[in-house]
Image 1 (tube, helix red, strand yellow):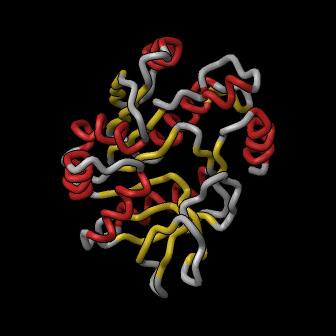
Image 2 (cartoon, helix red, strand yellow):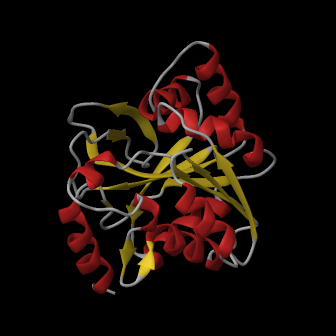
Length: 232
């Protein structure tokens, strides 16, 4: 399976709060968060890892070029206006087989992630999204599901059918890339609108709950993430 990491954000909130390192190089227990993701992906069978980094992050590119990833590592250097555009910049590298894509600041417990990947590998539908009922996000994307955990909608506000929010971990089949191309062609913006298009296009998507997923957006989140990792 192919894996991908979106690391093209500016990390402006961290910088404004005194964090000097680019977000991908912020360390948790002495390991940069982007390296942590790479190691987890390799341990979960990555055939390749494909990463987009913005043009203002030469330190991140230099770091990625210096490590022995343990599998094929492809780096795209491009500044983009949104995660959806970053995904599109990576899409040429993701064709041909299932892929799992995350943002660089997405933190999860590896044992839960391994179960998610195994389930996705065995799934005959179009995709599985990792979700959580732990809400610590400024603008969460709520996910509506039916009794079989099939995703029926992506919502900006909670409803009676939304028991989870998006965890920022997307397991998709190559079919999703065609829909991504359509979104780019008609001027759609934002990853959540791309996800809505997946449902509208009739793709069979399931939700897979993880206990807790944390994003690093603020300086205080670093300490929170350290404690989260230490739980295991």
